[in-house]
Length: 401
Image 1 (cartoon, rainbow, N blue to C red):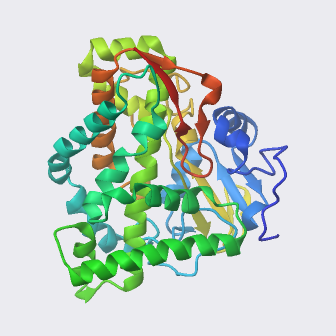
Image 2 (cartoon, rainbow, N blue to C red):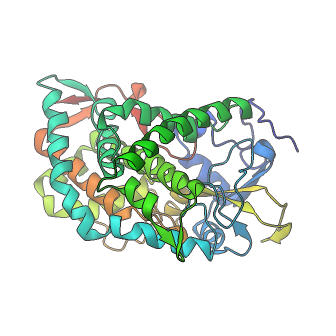
C-alpha cells in the first residue's frame, strides 16, 4: 500500500472510495445506499488503507468495539498520528479506555444542561446581530453570513479566545478537516500554524488566568497529576475545531432543507412546538459527522481482513439513513417521535458537546424563522458543500421575503 493518495476520480466506491472526492461532498447519500445493498463494508487502498462500513449495525459494532479499534486519531489522512494510545492526538475523542474516562469527565461540567442554558441568551443575541447585519436585502448567503459565525463566537467565548479571530478559526477547520488529501508535508505546515496560534493563547492564559475553559484545562488534574501540555493542546484543538464545524454544518444543512421544502418550513413556522422533534430529525437526516478509528492489530472482522493501522471510517450519516434502523429512512419527517439517531456518534465517544450543539441549532433556527418565515433557495446549483469528514453547506444563497 502507498501512503500517498491517488488523486484520480473514484470509479468504484466499493473498492476505491475517497471521502474527499467531489461526488461524496456533493451528494453522498446515493453512494451509501448503493454500498449498503451490494458491499456494506467497502475498502480502499487510499490513505494507506481504509474501510467503510455503511449499515447502522456495522457502524455501531465498530463504534462500540474499543478492543479491536483504537481512537488515537479520528481524522483519516495520509499519515498516522505520532501521539500513541491511550491519550491520542485530541483527548477525549482520540482516547482509549481507561484514559478516556478521566479525560471526558473533565469536560462534562462545561457542557452540562445548566452550563449550556447560561449561554443561550448570548447566543440568541448574536444570531439577531447577524440577521440585523443582513439588512433588508432579498438575497443572502445563510452559510457565509449566518451559520459559520454562530459556533465560532460561542466556542471562542468558552475558550477565552479573541472572538474577532473567526476567520482564523475557520481556516484551521479547513486545514484540519478538509485538507485531508494534502501531501503530508503541507498538512504538517498547516498544523504548525495552528500550534503557533495555540501557543500564543496558552501563554496569555498562563500570564492572565480567567474564568474560561483554557484556564480550566491548564489547571486541571487527572489522577492527581496536572494534564500534560499535549493533553491540554489536544483538548483545545478538539473543542475549537469540532465545536465549530459540526454545528456550523448542522445549521446550514437545516436551513438548506427548509429552503427547498416549503411544506416543512411552513409547518414549523405555524407549529413552533414541533421544533424539538424537527431539530432531531434534521440532525438525523443531515448528520454532518463521519468519525474514524484505526485497526489495533491484524484481524478478521465480519469477513474483512483488516490490517494493523488501517483506517475505519464511521459514516454516522449513513447509519442514520439505514432502512433497517429507521422507517422512511430517506425522508425528513419533522414530527418523527422515535428518533435514536447517531448524529452525535455512538459508544463511549458520543459527542460531549451535544447539549451545546442542540442549543445553538435550535436558537439559530428559531431566530432565522422569526426574521425570515418565508425563504427559498436563490440558486440550487450555487450551493456548495464541504468535503472530508464533516459535511455542510459552505455557500447557501437564499431568497428571503
